[in-house]
Amino acid sequence: MTAPDDALQACSSCGSTVLTRLPLVLTDGTDVTFISCHVCEVRAWFSQDEAGGWTSIPIASVLERSARKPR
Ligand SMILES: [Zn+2]
Image (cartoon, rainbow, N blue to C red; front, side):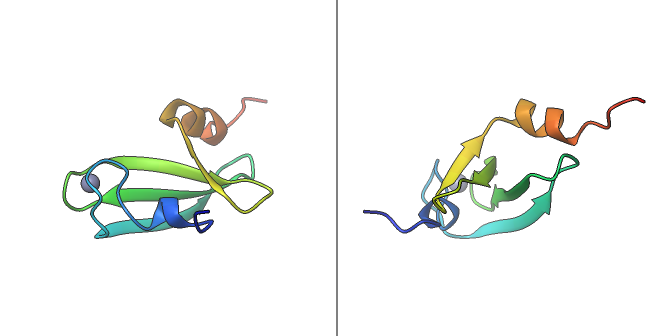
C-alpha cells in the first residue's frame, strides 16, 4: 500500500525528489497540485480524489477547467 501523497514525492519519470510542488485551485474550483521536476523538467498535474489519493490529470483537462466560460 502506498501513501496517499507518494505521487507527489518523487518524479514519475526520473524518480528525483527535487520537485517544485505548487497547490492551485482551478477556475472551476478543482484543487490540483502542479509538479515540476528540477532534474528532467517533467511537468505534471495531480488532483486529489475522495479517498485522498492523487491522480495525474492531462494538461488538456487542466486548461479546460481553467478556461473562463464566456457569458
Ligand atoms: Zn524528473
